[in-house]
Image 1 (cartoon, rainbow, N blue to C red):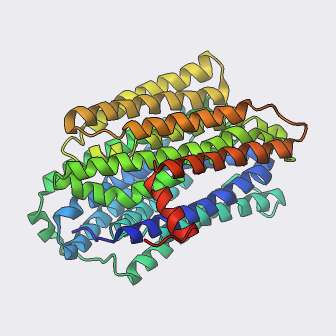
Image 2: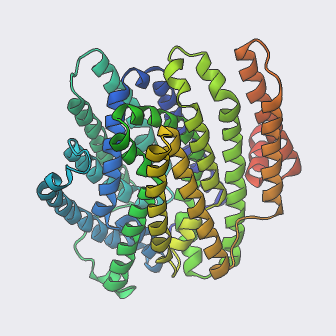
Image 3: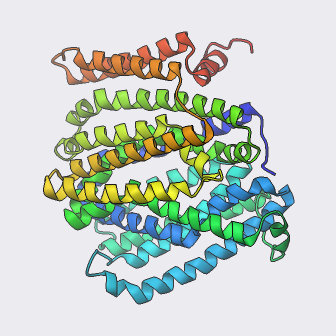
Length: 494
């Protein structure tokens, strides 16, 4: 049974999630602007190591965290602990297996890709796998804010510290920097375990056989295999660029690309929180065949995320280049502007289609994701090679290839969900919202600049944000916006 909460409690947890995420992004952006630009080589090494870890991570999890969300609605609450224990034991076993594969197979692959930091990547992947399992268990109990503090904020505090230590030669090698970064994630894992234990959301037991009276081991294994294949495909679609850039261009180029990616990542934060919070609810609605309710939630979430995505993107689109002109590292930062625009647009596309992946993953059609991701992996691989190598577009080519792949991926899922389940995230209000926000963004972009860069930045970005908020609030197109303004700002009685 999924732990239920009242809507206002869900909104409070989502608000806390977003607040802490934005604090983390703010720290990350400041680090990008003033610290990471001083050592693009190490930044590229770090991001490449992370990308390899993200590929190893699903092999260690083997769908355990997704299966936890998928099968919990079929269990009584007391059996959720047994399911978590079973998932944990599988992750530990898989970690040993993946380590042995790396130990005996790394030399064979070293001719095809850079693997000098593979053991750092494994340690990071192992921590990430266990962290993800704990986060999924906590999300079932509607606890997502505190994990966000740890998972988003702590690394963004640790990483600038590592750069400063490297800058002043207190540590003198990339390997020592990667070691400290791994230690940070080990501390996150330990803190999450203590947090979950104190709130009695986890427990360990070897008596797990009773959970298979509600579903069979074969059902669990089949779903797990499809979940891991889906995770790998997802990563090949969304992370392939950071794997190919170091191998086709350089670590330094990957560092520049990652600066742009961090700047654009601010757009996707509301989606990450909403998807984490509502995944258990989507799973429950699908299992109970409550598609009318699910369709309303689907449409409401898509409108909310489109609005927030375009609101933040308009600020970046209108102001990021002017902001970079005012900063001391402008030569490096201006290289990232076009990539920020492309990655930002990709995030908006991904947000505006709602939680289509979650709907497919928790339905009887979950196998479809494997087909879609297989096609998209090949498309992304070919597109990255074509834009980076053939057309010589560098990091802009990598960003555009990823945007193309993600656009096609989401269109395929939308069409499939519509014809199989009759669900669609779009309605007339969605289209009006899209048109109004794009028109306002273009209007303020077209206004001639004054001689003062700072004035242009404040005027264009400020007016664009205020006008969008005012119009959408007055027309009542996004219910959470009206609720927030009425209750928190205007203090209207409910």
